[in-house]
Amino acid sequence: MTFTPKSRRNPEPRPATPPPRPRRTAAMRRALPGLALAALGLGVSEAVHGLLPAVPTLTAAVVLGVAAAHLPGVRTFVRGRGQAGLSAAGKRLMRLGIVLLGLKLSLGDVLGLGWSTVAMVVAVVLATFFGTRWLGRRLGLSGDQPLLVATGYAICGASAIGAVSGALGRDEDTEEGRRHASDVAASVALVTLCGTLAIAVLPLLRAPLGLDALQFGRWVGAGVHDVGQVVATAQTSGPEALGEAVMVKLIRVVLLAPLVAGVSLARRRRARSPEADGTAHAGDRQPALVPLFVLGFLAMIGARSTGQLPAGVLDAADTAQGLLLAAALFGLGSAVHLPTLARSGGRTAALGLGSWIIIASVSYLGVWLTT
Image (cartoon, rainbow, N blue to C red; front, side, top):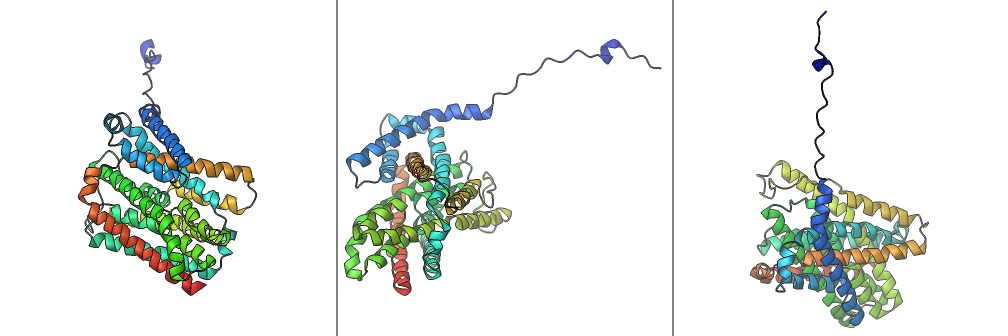
C-alpha cells in the first residue's frame, strides 16, 4: 500500500480568482453617453415635426444627426465618448424598429390586392434593385453604397438600408467597417431626401400622367420609399388613393425578408472565395443566412395575420417603432462626414436621381398594365 501524504490527499483550496468584468456591462456603460444624445436628438426631432408638420420626424432625425457630427464642441463628443452609443443606436435600435415594422403587415390584406398587383410590385422591386446596383457600378461608386441605395429605393427606405447593413456583418472596429458606417449614413440621407421630395413632386404629376385616385395610390405605394412618405404623398388624392398606396407599399415591405436573406447568402458565397471579386475582408464577420431580426420581423407578420392582437397593442407598437427608427436615424446621421461625402457627392446624387427615375418609370408602367 502506498502512503499518500495528507497534504496531497487534501490539498488546500486555491484562492478563487475574481470573475472578469462582464463585457456587456462595460459595453453598456460606454454606450450610455451616445444613447443619451440619441434620445435628446429624438426629442428635438419630435419637436421639429410638431412645429413643422411637413417635416417628417425621421427626416429631422437624420438632419440633426448630421448637424451634431459637425457642430463645434458637439462633434468632439460625437467622435469620442458618444461614438459607441450612437453606433449602437444606429444598429440595434434600427433592428428593433424593423421587427416592430412587421406588425403593420397582414398577409390576408396583402394577398387581397390580387396576384397581378403582387407580381407588379415584385417586378418593380427587382428592376429597381438590380438597376440601381448596375448604375452605381457604372458611376464608379465603391464600397457598399450602391447596394445600400438600391435596397433603400427598392424596399422601404432607411429601414431596408439598416436591415441589409446588419446582414453584411461588417466589423465596426476596422477601417472597412467605419467606411461602411459612412456609406450607410450617406445612403439613408440620400433616400430620405428623395422620398421627402416625392411628397411635393408626385402629386403635381398626377394630372399630367392621367392617373385616377386608385392608380395614383398604387403608383405612390410602388415608387415612394418610406411608409410615412407614402402616406403623406397619397393622402393628397383622398382615402381611396391612401388605402391603395399603403397596401401596395406593404407588399414591398414583405419583400424585405427574402432580399436580406439573398444578400446574406451572396455574401457567404463571396466569403468562401474572396479572390473572386475582392469584396470579402478578413475583419468581417460571417453573416447569418437569415439574421435574427428578420426572423423577428416575419414572426410579427404572423402575429398580425392572426387578427388576435388588440388595437391598443398595435398602436403602441407603431409609436415605439417610430421612436426607435428616429433614434436610430439620428445615430446613423452622426456617422456622416460631409467633407468625405462631398468628394463623391456628384456621383452619389446622380445615383439617387437615376434610381428615382428607374422606380418611378417601372412602377408607372406596372400600374398601367395592372389596372
